[in-house]
Image (cartoon, rainbow, N blue to C red; front, side, top):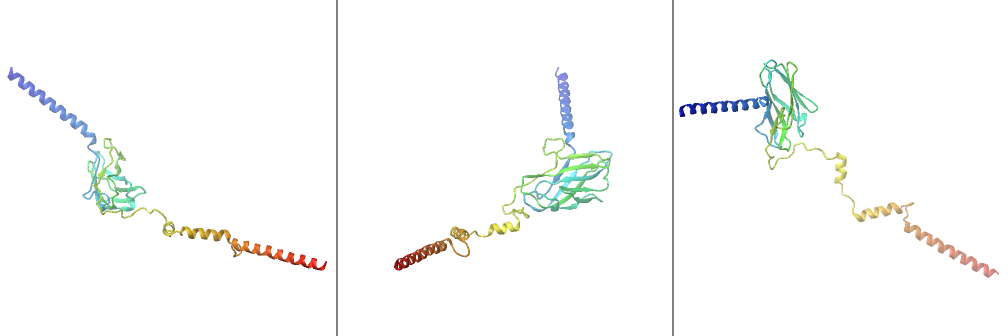
Length: 237
């Protein structure tokens, strides 16, 4: 009995192992092709960083001809320079990223290229959404930000910024004129009050107090004149 049972168990284990391996291969196949990104200096706020990409080919009959990349927040097209890529390929900056394209590669050949970024943003990761086009006009869209998606975008994980790292090109917070006005010291409270009183009382160069004094003097003078005239009239009678 033991001679019969042992082979049966062995066959069952072999079948189970083969089935498990088949499941692993089948589930891994859809995610095999994608765009990979890496950098030896993947650190937030690092400057002059070279980033390498490898777009894997999914076609046995057509070659890759173009890679269109949308840059992540914090990296402008003007901050990116082409490092190297397939022979004959050229780099062109776009409004929201860049394009690397050229003669079609051999069918099944991956497209490898690299760029240099002036400075990485202060973030934990940066995603480079990529449209991968083949010579037969087929386009693979590696743009999903969900790691579990079928077409994930290449994401570069960043280490925390160095303690002395600072943004090389901070965003302007105000125009030069506004900034100058903001830095001008404001008058003291007493000076503001005096200026307000001068503006409100300014009338022909005389203050309100001066006009009150003049009015009082006129009243007294008129009263004196009236008194004198009445005295003269009484003396004549």
